[in-house]
Length: 248
Image (cartoon, rainbow, N blue to C red):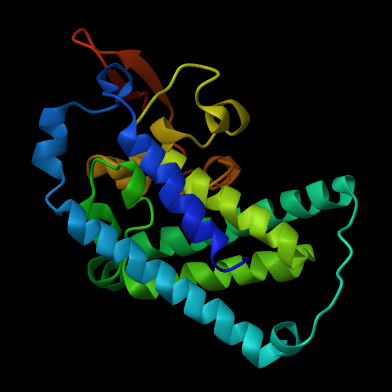
């Protein structure tokens, strides 16, 4: 379940976004912008995400087999820690994952070879949308998978707590790439974390923004500490929808 549940959660949560009635009045980009910027067909994006998820499952299953084979052959009762302990583990895992993602992500941009041959695949979706959140080069997915393993080990989570964390992380990635600016109460992640769809949209849309807002998926303090934070405001478009405007 720890391997499969995040995949199921990803497609269910992304599917909800795609099956909702038209939400043009909440979108950060117009249909014209979407048609002009996103040239990758949807079936290609779906196939790319499935390949990435397959790599993640195979990698994690292989690591389990190599380093803790007893998990596959022996029935063991694992006592879940208390809720306060699990909350602390969540916080540690979020901080570790944010550090991993920020520095790997920033290096993927500053290293021209890595950007051209690996990370640029993710940026072909210049106007992001829900099911394309994990669309990336297979090598990048492998690097992200190892980041998840580091979070699991450093935080000391049980497999069950890790299942919860990885599922929420999948949902958070979709939220960042949804392209929707929902009203308060309808976008739970926007109320909890500063890293939201508008913040990450700056990084995706336009060449200028790609030098900023590397932080993901939870907090934004790495950008602020290291000078890669781009301030912004979200304003309503006259004909419906929203627009992210840079303040710098």
